[in-house]
Image (cartoon, one colour):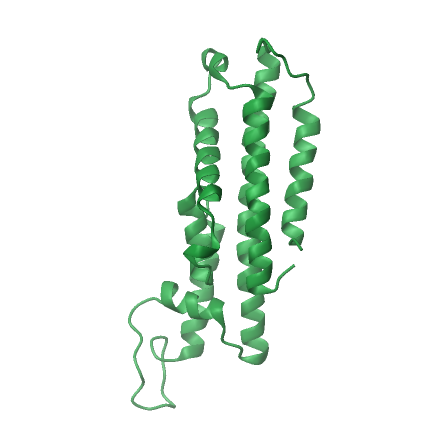
Length: 208
C-alpha cells in the first residue's frame, strides 16, 4: 500500500514524461537542442515533484502524531524522536508541579518541537540525503529503515538538478547524457526506490 502522496508523485512524473519526453530515442545520440532542453526540463521538474513528495509525506507523519497527541495524549515514536532532536534548550524537572515553563512543561516542550520541525520542512530546498535526514530522522525513522540505494539516487538527482539550473548553457548541452537510457531511466529508478521507502513509511506510521 502506498501513500496518497506517492500516488500523486507517480502521476506527476508520468505527466512530465508525456509532456517533455515526447520525442524518439536515437541510437546515434544525435538529439536536437530542443530535445535536450526538454530532457533537462524533465529532470528539473521531476526533482521538484520529488521534493514536494518528501515534504508532504514528512508533514503527514508529523501531523498524524500531532493529532493523536492533541486529541488523546498519545506519546509515540514520532514525538519521542522530535523531543530528542528538536527540543530547544535544556529541559528540567520543575520544583513545583503547578509552576512550569517551556523548559519543564512536557506539553510546551512537545509543541515547541512540532513548530521547530514544521519550520525545517517549510524551509527545505532539495532532495539530497542531508535534506531527507532533516525532514525524516526527527520523526522517528531509523537508519535501517532507509536503503543506501535511495540515498545515492537522491544525491545524484539533486546534483544533476544543480548542474542544470546553475551551470547549464548552450555549450553544455552536448554533454547531456542520453535522454532515455540515462536521464529518464535514472528518474524512474529513483521513483522505484521511493516506492520501497513509501511502503516502509506506511508500515511504520500507519499513514496512507
